[in-house]
Image (cartoon, rainbow, N blue to C red; front, top):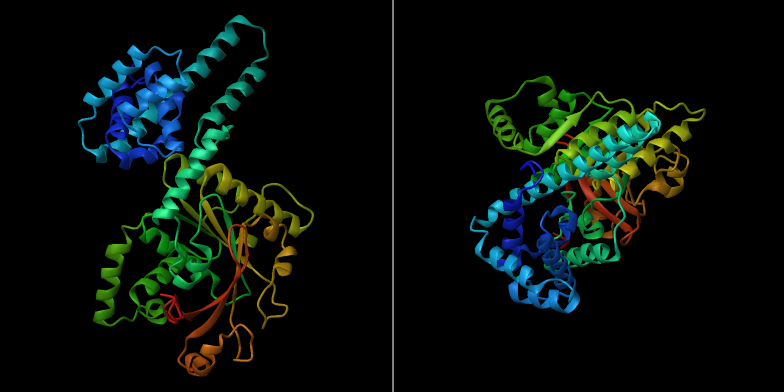
Length: 445
């Protein structure tokens, strides 16, 4: 078969490096048998998956033994010959492994697409089936192939994925996206792929700055971040980012009247944040269009976290009689993106001004479509007026007035809903002049 559809070298390299180093065993759940073109390699992978699940070493000896015990009908000579070839192969450095895995997946996808198109060609030539029916079948089968599609997973696949996640958590290597605020991350353990988080606040409390801080913190850790803003222009958002990262006052940036040292700080900041894996979209008005743009990013491997600022401003091409129905539709689309694309979605939401001096509650969101119902996590921001507010920590009451007089804001952050963790409040300091949130140091850092 054409080398575009089979790359035996990539398959050999990936399996060889897994056999030779226990550090590569975490890749076993990512490979499926149908990704491999060689029958013996598929059998070897099946044995690797079994060993991975049993937390046993993966090497030529254990794989051979597992094949004999679990698959006695298979030809041991052919499998052992393939194992011997794998032991001799894989001479390239391990940093090539990810690229070889990508090539393996790419050629596997091409093979599957070719099978679909060949099957459709046969149906068009040999049957009188309606063209529309053949076309719909092609569309459905192709959609199942892309990474954003849906597929059934076996119990083994589920257990392997879960076990891999548990291993990462036990080693402290699980990839979660930080907020940039230690006290909040202690409660949420960061933001996770597959989850929709709603961050709600009443107007002018600082939710956009809060969202930007999370996005920057995730990007600084190497996560690929996409930001859809319907509230600000590109320059407005850029000024906020530079203020937060450089420490230059927002009013100086707005006026353009900067001192020489401030220009230096801005230039230095722009130098390093320009390397952040972040992309922005300001022109997408409809949620359906946003989904298509997100799918392009995901298919290109360029998105881990999507930030939407903010939910109520997103429109829908579908018409609704009531505004809360539109918001509910947007909410469901956002939640679907988390599971269909395996990304984290953080959506900012504005809470009505009623009871303006109180912490928002989940019931405040229930009037906004299905935001509260669809969300995996809900976080509220609240700015207390004085120390009588129950969300002011007892240790902070003595310094509260001095804090507010200095131009800073005391913000209570309440994790009101978290499907996979605890709820509860913490407090942070917001510097509106620099668009920056910081944790309060009380032994939580």
